[in-house]
Image (cartoon, rainbow, N blue to C red):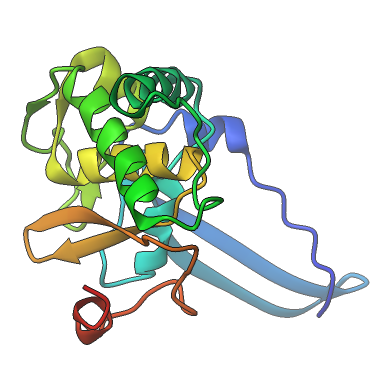
Length: 201
């Protein structure tokens, strides 16, 4: 079977606030004859739910939103801070091929986020027992609360908005951001070999 047209109801999925169990009914027909039929149970997550790192951990990156309007506001403040610190507001990512300039930009993002006075808070309430609810950047900046994962994703989004290459580093019970000081990336979206980080420190 090729070129199957499957249409999802994006508006419905975007309104889900809790995970729900659903049923997919599949029927293969030839004219009026049913050649095959099967039902499959699936679970649909809320729009702000991450299933955890045991299944498709790369989906975590979908919560990094560098083009969100709230992050663009932070970006404006980052330029102001850079001008205060270095007399140059340029958000030039890796163009200068200078690790010092990259660190300055990352530090200015950190400072701009510090000014938001965001308070650490545990996960949002959820009926799920796997994974974690994620506060998106507009929710964090509006409510001023976030977990380490929420703030990791926010910081990574801000770095990406400057053209920098962040890393999402996930440990049991904790997460934080790493950053490439030169314009490089890992070849794979998910890497579980810690030595790949320590070799580059």
